[in-house]
Image (cartoon, rainbow, N blue to C red; front, side, top):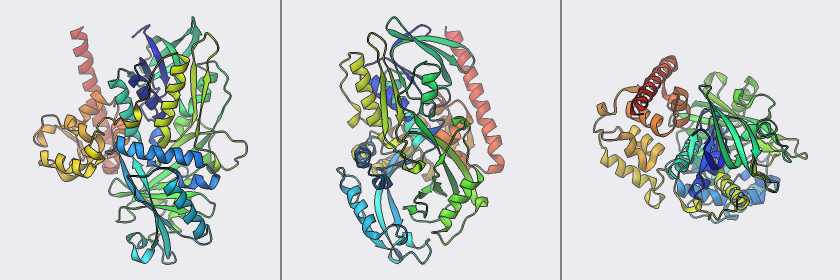
Length: 514
């Protein structure tokens, strides 16, 4: 690869970078994506896991953003029905916070701002007549139900990167941009690998999709000014034991006008979040603090009969969202979740496109617009293609996951039901590739953690760029939650040792072949 020339160098392996790489590669551009850590290592694996229009954004008159997101919700539900699924939300009515007529009006808009084919509309409910009412305090009498989508956010990033690679892109994780300069109508960039080695490449254009680092990258490695800026906002989540038995999620209105979600998570748990706090530290070192944990617990205790405390928290995660700066928005919650694309293309010079802001739901549209802009700057005829294209594993007939799951389980009746369901959810139609020719659990190899066998670990390393136990247990899956806390460190150590040995074997094999 030393000295290779690409049409597009993408910086950043989060959802926007992976989406841009996929879109560009599918249009015939030669693409190199580099990510300084693992795919989805930061913001893109720290979301609330929702594909949604953003009901609360209507309150800030973000009608265009909500319409765009609602359209994308339908597109993504069809593109990846294995990792994206419909989810019904219950909003208890608290008369002292927002009047019922306002909520009804908002839900009516939410139902009709964009064409809706896959999800049922909203309706009012009486809590004592609905399963979602049982866990709530008795003072809550009524509420509303509406639809949105759930997504495995980190896997969404991986699948975009995988589709990019299958369309010809080169994906380099653990590879950082050191610097890039314009020369002779192209970009000349130096990349540094995890082992300290450097790689010099050339590119006709660069897409800066570094998320929280977008401004830092412009001023530093790229040496360019920016006309936009982002405000870093920390969002934290907690995971507790399961707080309710039904399959609906909750959206709660707090007195401070913030919205908190409580969502069924990994079968045995409830995901609660998120907070919105200004953040000024290193985005790679973000973590929840005690006040955030207490805030989330208090928010839940305002609504649920069963109370929780910080001692009930099983796991936490935090991320830094790079939101478009708005001088008129003092409250982080009021900052827009829309995005802006900034093109720097002086006459005769190689173009640079930087991505500011955005949300996971609109990543595909953002990527499409980014590549449209770059293709025009490069004078390339490159028609759009992703709107009807499934992501890897998402080519499920009629987007009917339940029918696919039943057939998958029939074909592999020897798989325990819970394992079959997890593999089908994670990999869709490619779950067969994970299993390979195995016909029994023993043939899947060593079991490293509950439900994690050597065959899957090998697939994750060879196909999905997993390089550590952290990649496997907390991003490619959430199996870390299902490991007994006292044994988690040993499980992680065993996985890291296996990956190191497998990597050494592959390296030795390649050296012999060469």
